[in-house]
Length: 432
Ligand code: HEC
Ligand code: HEC
Ligand code: HEC
Ligand code: HEC
Image 1 (cartoon, rainbow, N blue to C red):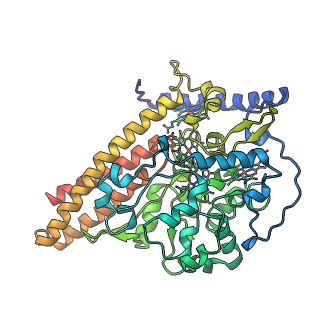
Image 2 (tube, rainbow, N blue to C red; image 1 turned 45 degrees about the horizontal axis):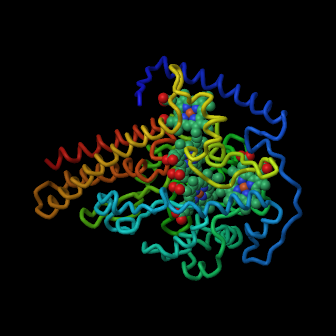
Image 3 (cartoon, rainbow, N blue to C red; image 1 turned 180 degrees about the horizontal axis):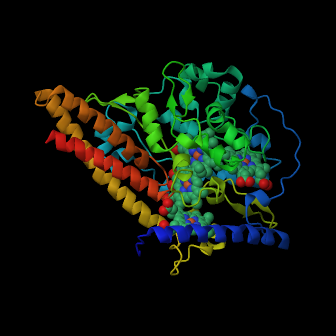
């Protein structure tokens, strides 16, 4: 596709255009709603009155099935996530497609077991099947509302409960309670670390509940060294950029795993979809929520609208692309290319660069291990290279493990890859 190099004036122009178009979307959205059943966004759907539902389940989580009589359409779409068993039907093993990670993650489970993410219905099966070690209940943080409710009842001690003990008490994969508590139709932050980090911002309306609900899991996190509790490496929207996160980890000397070849204490980044979409440089933050692009409105057989709870790529949502996105994404002179074309070109560029840089990180790993073995470099040079290696791999991993593969915020992904490559080149220069 035609590649655009936006100069500063074009960027200012795009921002102004965005504002104008965004305003027009909201006007036309409500106009559509007034005409009849066809609504522009989930927020415009009228939530039906339903009775309170009580449950006998452990820790009081009302299950999706228990809600199903009252929200039949939503429940049906929620269950359709079970059809997501991997892109193209076969689940990718990154250990095979990206063999560099066997070296880069050596010393931790992802070096031998790392498969692509699939639908929410499979979270409990996946955690049971993974061959990655999981000793404590904190691994259940993003897998089941039963554990979320256990934390809400027991406090942070729940995170340090032995895995098998906790697993015996859970049975519901990610479901209604995670995003709504026991009050579907309202957005509720149920995960304590997210309430601690962003609760005030959400309460003040600076971060939408439809973003924060997903951000309870689609974020970078770590386990506290002492309490084993799940935490975010930031406490406000001002410090969830990659530079601040790295500075936070470096200040506390945090180590996720030690690479067995080189002895370098590494950080393992996890799925920072929230940080990329809401980060500096994101074209659509403030304009759309995660739900706008990954859920959207669907219509039942009677033609009534409901919030689609099948979480898909916007590329698989033809109605969304046609009715909403094509307003700007139509490939005319002043407008960006259609969404699939744009996304595919960004992803090809980003994943291509990821491979080049992971190749350099493997070279560092091999040469550093050899230098340590032979004693050919002075200790202070070795220390310098170890630090460059740790930081370079962090910036690379922030892009590599992010599930939008650059589509959320290509500017930020490019910046991270630039930093990773510069640091890697410095390390290689020292290694000779
Ligand atoms: C992963 C998070 C998540 C899960 C799980 C989830 N929802 Fe939702 N739900 C949302 C979001 C996000 C919205 C959209 C809010 C918006 O943008 O206006 C929503 C909207 C709704 C609405 C309001 C729709 C309207 O008419 O305006 C209802 C009712 C609802 N969900 C019920 C359920 C039920 C019942 C379940 C379980 C079967 C469930 N949800 C599971 C995130 C979730
Ligand atoms: C309680 C934790 C949790 C919440 C909340 C959550 N997710 Fe997820 N999500 C996961 C996990 C874990 C997986 C991977 C499941 C697997 O591979 O077994 C996943 C997978 C997905 C996938 C499939 C990824 C793929 O590559 O096919 C999408 C899409 C997704 N989530 C979107 C969302 C959106 C949008 C929201 C908010 C409306 C949300 N999630 C909220 C935990 C969560
Ligand atoms: C108001 C106009 C407008 C609308 C509506 C719009 N976009 Fe965009 N979008 C843009 C502009 C401008 C860019 C930047 C294009 C560029 O860099 O070439 C962009 C970029 C993107 C990107 C790439 C982001 C990046 O960081 O490079 C994605 C993905 C995207 N849009 C998806 C969507 C989806 C999905 C929809 C519909 C839900 C949508 N857009 C609706 C104006 C819009
Ligand atoms: C402007 C539209 C837009 C918004 C808003 C958006 N995303 Fe995405 N997201 C995308 C696109 C485009 C992709 C790449 C899809 C693909 O590869 O098919 C993507 C991919 C993903 C994936 C991987 C899913 C898959 O099928 O590969 C997850 C998970 C995800 N986003 C989560 C989120 C979360 C969480 C938020 C809110 C913090 C969010 N997204 C906000 C456009 C969006």
